[in-house]
Amino acid sequence: MIALFLALQVGVASAAAPIPDFIIIRDGASTVSVPVTITGGQASVRADALMRAMKGTLITGTNLHYTLALPRVRLDLIDGIPFAKRDTLTIPLSRAPQVRGGQLYLPFQFVSEVIPRFGGGYSYDMAQAELRTLGPPTQPTSQIAKSTPPPASSTAVARAPAVVPESVRTPAPQMRRPAATKPQSRKLVVIDAGHGGPDNGMRGPIGTPAWFVEKDVTLSVAQKLAASLRARGIDVLMTRTTDTLIALSDRGRIANANHGDVFVSIHCNAPAYNNAAGARERGFETYFLAEAKTEDERRVQDMENESVKFETGANAPKGDPLSFIITDMAQNEHLRESSDLAETIQTGLIDVHPGPNRGVQQANFAVLRGSYMPAVLIEIGFGSNQSEATYLSDQANQSAIARNIAGSVIAYLAHYDSRVGGQR
Ligand SMILES: [Zn+2]
Image (tube, rainbow, N blue to C red; front, side):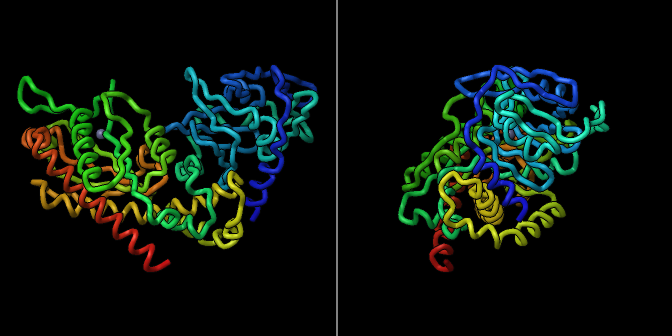
């Protein structure tokens, strides 16, 4: 309930603060100024400069994660995601923090609203453009060492809701089954050809002079999959159709912005060890997004306990901060759907792939994390194994794999629809 209340406060208090050229950080008698930069009409503050001025530390984690270690609290952020986290509390932001030129920029609202509410003892004076510490001055040095790794709580940020797509900003009962919001419409499958441009993915030998290059094979299979789905009345959106590099976080965002029903990412595998045993590795496997078991159980438990009060948000207006909470609920639903989709695809491939069948796997892939729909990543085989690389490079084999995956996706969508119709 506290989380909900605080989240609403931010939404209500979003009256635009005037944008100064710089802000003053006042801690007792000491003041430090931090410039406000305007890019594309949007005001931002550099996170490192702000942390220095506030006697905190900016910690760069992995996978676009950042932690602002303030003297009293830690706020976790993800580049490109418009939410912050303080422990288990999710805080919506007016805009996503963004890395530009190697530096993390925070929306100005972070200084004027988020830190005063969630930063552990600050107020913001709009007229003076001053962020002040409340109460006695803080200790001159923070106890948090620069080398401190991201806290355990930062892993929870990996499960932070992705960019809230328009499609889920609708009443909750429909949101629990997003397909129900458009039962008669055509389905949209988002196909993601792994890697591209300067990112070749894995490379393996087919025999001189040819090399197996993952980005080329994934694109070829993705295009055949798209053609097969389109031929069967399914709309398709490809994250890339040429040899270009699309950021992992953007692939999910593309899928979300276009309200995809399913997200399928195509990849080729390589062994963990570059030795003779590694070179013999072969087979196909399908991944869906999931956290480590124990953490997942904790999250599900938390979510179940929390969910009843969030249902009151069913009629929340579009863009209301509540929508992210509902989004989080729906995302959990997609976990099971993603697992079902992975199982359907993996089982289907047994018919065409020489194998072995390496089964359905779970992992926390960045590319799947940002996509707000049932999402899987298929490793169609080991490009590092000479015979499998040869098999995967063959156009007819690629077509067989693509048609098979298309059939599984269509079967999954039909199954999904019948369950929606039958049970809800
Ligand atoms: Zn790959």
